[in-house]
Image 1 (cartoon, one colour):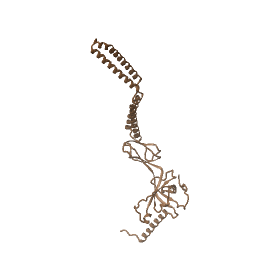
Image 2: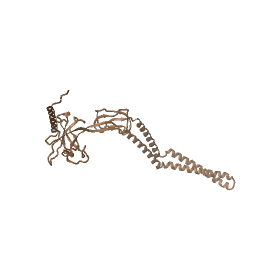
Image 3: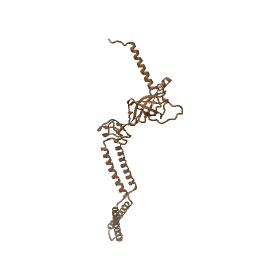
Image 4: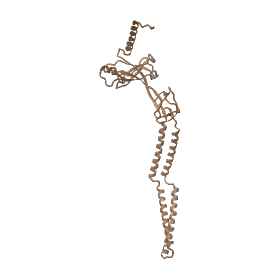
Amino acid sequence: MKKKPKPQILVAALVVIGSGAWLTHRLLTPDDGTLLVSGTVEATEAELGFQVSGRLDRIDVREGDRVQPGRELAALDRAELQAQRAAAEARIAEAKAVLAELVAGSRREEVARSRAMLAVAVDRRDASRRDVDRLRPLAEQQLISRQSFDHETTALAVSEGEVARATEELRLLTAGTRPERIAAQRAALAETEAALAGIDAMLSQTGVTAPFDGVITIRHREPGEAIAPGSPVLTLQNLSDRWVRIYVPGDEVGRLSLGQCAVIASDGYAGRRYAGTVTYIASVAEFTPRNVQSTKDRVRLVYEVRVRVLDDEAVDLKPGLPGDVTFAAPAGPGARRVACATPSGSRS
């Protein structure tokens, strides 16, 4: 049978617990006018993926790798797109050759052949005309049959038609290609070039490049997997852009302003202090009712504040670590703002 604790022991325990709570409150709320708020270190992150779908061909980085901006980190299989690009280049070459032929016009050999054909047609026509002129008096005197004369007359008409056709062919060859055909071919060439540009754009989207200097924190996929557009493949964290996210009570947020200096500390690096500056103060309170009716409720409002880390080149304050942010007591009216200095005991 268990013994019940004595009343004296219970009273002593309650005194110890109460004293600890009071001491914690005093440590977090100094009476020298400073404001101490705890939060969490965060950093800018980017989830990197592809704009097109495909099979993941390779990933060149793993978690913890430091990458430079512009480096290609992963790529999709490009075989199909490269084949389409080769076909588009062939169509462009064909369209350019046709356009060059149209712009150049007829060859000299073709013009010379047309002139020779015209000359032959003219000789035939002249011979037929002489035959008709010679036979017309004989036909009028009925010395030759009417049928023979009509045959020569028909031959003259045919030869004149051949001369007209040869003349027109020579004119077309010397005039060159119609402007409308050249314009149409230029449009066809532009269309094939646009298709090639579209394929190049798709090829540029089959690679993931680092947008900034950072560290790979998550490798979401592996080579061989099918990737949908927009699906994250890698998560890149910018350790040069870190801040501590804190929540300040509504009755204290009026003491803060953008650009205000702060001192950041973390339990993981006891004794070290890091400079910070306020870069964001929320304009809307969080975790409160929509309508606040009393002063008591307003005191419970908290506002998100972000304090940017300024002087931690060694990246001691890693994302995810808890951090304590201290704001100095507010200066008097008209005090001039000074630059945020590196606190004593910090490490750059």
